[in-house]
Length: 334
Image (cartoon, rainbow, N blue to C red; front, top):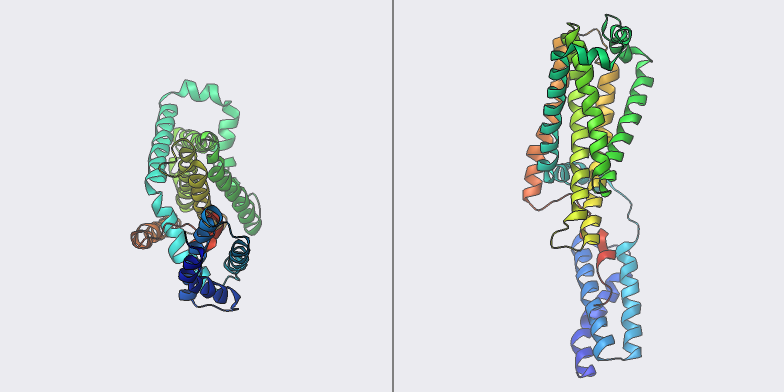
């Protein structure tokens, strides 16, 4: 290959890359151009090292690439537009993208809780063997543990306590999926079993109405958040087994970044459910009003995911980082 002809043909792009990399401010179009030129020049450097071992040219291109990499990976201060884009596009798209995973998780979990609860209600001998009768009375009687739990602390402190516990649980569920999804199943079963067992004892004591009145306002959004975290955690675990056409590392990085986006969203949804649990669930509002608040919030969240999320997902948004934020994944040389 003629090195002079190669340099003459490619030098204008290298010079353009150098000029863009030295600018302090770039338009969106210029950032896209900078990224494209950086990748093309990285390929050129690979060619030079392989076919045209010219030390001077290698040094020039390496310096230009170092400069452009610095420009592309420099910390960017979040602005209101990027924050808004996160909540209007990335988050709903990331949740919608995994809808079959967490939707299936939700249906199977609810079915398991119902079957467990029904079985315990139908078999009093099992209930009596599972928990001593004195503890059952303490749990289910009017003014018992199940009811007083929601007023066991001042509302503000209770909300903070519930939120902290739940969001750590959600994040643990999300990212423990990297361990082939096995820990996710244990966390999910523990929560489903608690729901089924508590419901069974309350229903058997003739206080099913109290159970559902207290659980529904905050439980709809809270359990939906847990199911989303578990479903995406299981997807992360499955990626370890079947990464598809990508390398296992690349697939895990992609799913991990998307899980992090969802994790931020779950912190906020669980904050919302914690506020409802502290201020609405134990309030003196009529049962219909409390349940109505929970149903309205849940419907709003699902609309956000299945309407907004579907729309942006169809336009190509998947909830991952933008390409410019993933520059380190691009090969510097071939």
